[in-house]
Picture 1 (cartoon, rainbow, N blue to C red):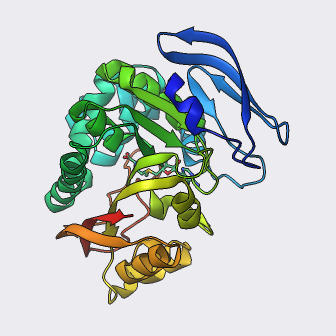
Picture 2: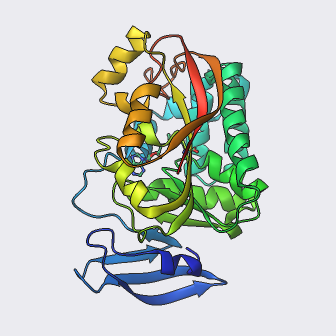
Length: 332
Ligand SMILES: C[S@@+](CC[C@H](N)C(=O)[O-])C[C@H]1O[C@@H](n2cnc3c(N)ncnc32)[C@H](O)[C@@H]1O
């Protein structure tokens, strides 16, 4: 993480001040440190440049950790499948398997080949409209942020698609965040490979309990992060507490009449932020003024499953063909 973040941070558990002991720096970046809360004595380390502000009390279903563990175990037990996944021409694989090959190559640090595999997988995993709508929302945020200054904090950054676009096209520093340290370790290597790591800091925390001081964040973004946060509870209030500027959220919404997807989404407990009306109501109830910009509709299909890895899937939703409304939610 970069030095400038220190003054924006506090203890995520009790909001106390942090006392920093920095053991290793590189350039304007802290590689290794300990931040101790002067109030509750909780301790938060910085390791490999990644600041870890996770608190022990919030349950964490880290799919990054689970998928990587399962994938490497499965391939270890089935070397013939591993050969079929890695040693065949890329275009002989189904799109989901091209994507899983990218994950395996990333685990091995082979980012150039992983990039090629993921690049080929996406057009087979998503409809052209899905990809175009998604691209358009990220471009919309870039245009809006061009005139702004100061760091952009991105929430639930995952594979850092939006972080990558922001770091490439904007001059200001970017902070990638996720509750999965594993995702951020992967992001560090990925951004180093792309030559974009210089301007990016990595912070691990749960979006429901962030380590930011009241009003410390002028610009918050997220790319499809909100609906991935299980048991969101006070999430939008917590974000309201820390944001004194604008929150830009790439979002997509299911139609109210889409019964098949609605039922599956409700069963997964993810409904409130995947439907326009309830999302807007939740933002308003948490004290935000919110508007919808760059709205556009696009056909979406369930992502096809792996042919090699026992039918493993990529995205949970949609479960049936649908038309999604894409937009950027602009909340102040
Ligand atoms: C699918 S990604 C969203 C796409 C991503 N923003 C991008 O630009 O590539 C969702 C991420 O949310 C993270 N996540 C889920 N629950 C979270 C929480 N409570 N706090 C922080 N991150 C969370 C997951 O680890 C995952 O990486």
